[in-house]
Length: 201
Image 1: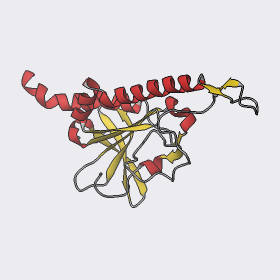
Image 2: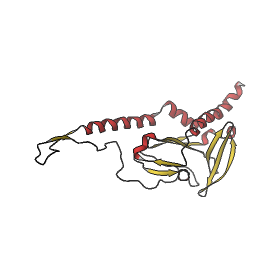
Image 3: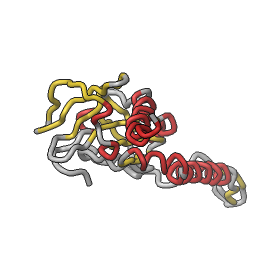
């Protein structure tokens, strides 16, 4: 039994990750709105097999994963894959989180980021810094702001200083991989999250 553990561990780890990501699957239509970015927290998951179309995960129930292959701009029929036959390094995950996109390539990349979550710490730091600067700026006194003679004093508020706020609505997102950013405000459908055939960048 101990001898089989090294062979069983990758499948066990993959199963734990699939339980996590399928519990927070992105909806069919993901609204990426600036004002609601802190509510965003979902996963888009697929497998990238050599010389095959991308297999987009449609559901998971141990010991099988339900997928649909994406090719020529359309999904194929749903099929089931045995989890113990799926290479751990074929996993591809995009985590849409607070207006950002965090990408994982393989199960060990997921484990590494779980131990050293620098991407999430960076997002948290920017959010805290943005809130702090916003609060300070809203309390900033502007001499002569009220009145035409320049003798009044008032508080200038309501201007958002959060880092990277967009000046205009961005274009329709490209096909997979969707490169998220702090300033993304758009509507993403499950089809647009999927790739065109070819290797991932």
